[in-house]
Image (tube, rainbow, N blue to C red):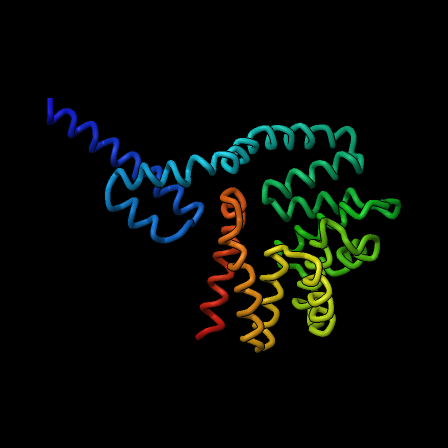
Length: 245
């Protein structure tokens, strides 16, 4: 009986560690958790309770991939009979959510016409272009959006425009716009892009300051926001290592 219990618990222990390690690799929480997971199955269980279960809200997003893909298939079929701007824009939005940036941009190209008066498709096309590192293409789209609404998407649009200025050889414009936006916006993305820009200009102390501002948010953030912000925390830590060498 004792050997059977040991066998059962050993396999459960291995399974708990596998679940915990897969989540750890995907979400990259504090490194100390890795040693806790590996030390004992109880550590893996504690990790699952403290990190995996609270992440369930984020993990639910992954289940949306199946209805999204189904809707993509439906729209691709519908466009054959009705290649309207609305259908192309909805399809582009779905491709953007799916991380298929090249196809998203191609669909936005077809959705946008001379009569398009909403800044949204231009903004979303710019996001796809930035993800594709086609900064020259993103520049006129973001300038169009910010000219229409300087606060667009809670100041994310002007923050991205400053980032694109930095990437397209306009450091003066980038500096001026970053300074303006960071007085109002507290987006980690904007702070980190500003830090990257400062580092590229050889202004390492200032780059460290802005990267540290991203990390300074962490202690006071609720757990769900910490989990959402992890990619920015990782990038901020990586930048700090580069500018302190």
